[in-house]
Length: 105
Image (cartoon, rainbow, N blue to C red; front, side):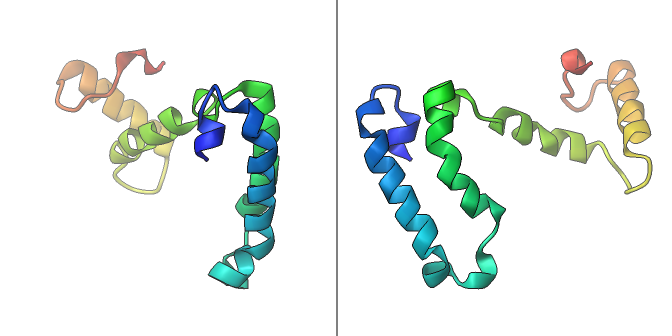
């Protein structure tokens, strides 16, 4: 992964591809067949992403995924999540308590 996170390691992507293919091939032997998922197979395509988009941390969705905790904390029950979030947003605008960015909308 260090190779795929580094902008100056493109000479090593073929080696990284071989390592990833070996990892995917032997995954079930290490972690058990019951842990094999589409995510494991998805690793085989990660080199293509590196070539298309550059280092992986430059095309990551983590900033959006990390924000999910803010959205989830705005919900009080499982019903009508959008309406609940709108109510929490309005509360934030009127009575600032929690940090919910106003530029979300």
